[in-house]
Image (cartoon, rainbow, N blue to C red):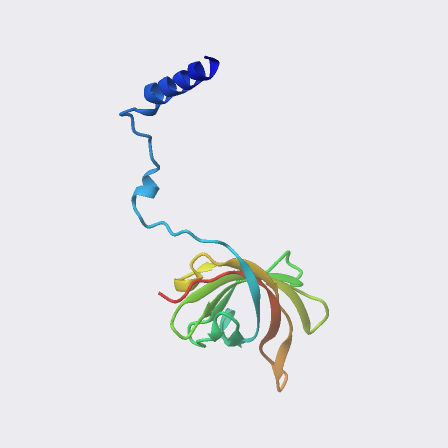
Length: 172
């Protein structure tokens, strides 16, 4: 008798509360259909770049080299720009970086560096998104190197590094 009473109450519960004309409120961003299901996975990244210094524009330049997941850099579109010269003692600095792939996709970030002697530099690159397959990229890498001179004239920085970057999509 008790089992029948329990099944009857469960049945009444489902009928009374299971059938409803009410609709649940939804998030309007879900209705757009533009969201992608992504799983963030960090993968290794490494490379070598040369930051070309232009005397007439001391806070801006271009880059050449190779970076995994980007490939050979497009030299005219891969740029760096000084955004912070540090605390005034010229030992620390920060640069905004754009790595441009051959197909035009760009990986952007910031490089924070510091002189450890007159020519050697240590730093960290922070990846902060971009365009195309780098749209939601994130991660960081070491980026250490040295100043390069030609006949006593400062012409650029050589940097090499490795670290981790969130998985990047295929080109759009």
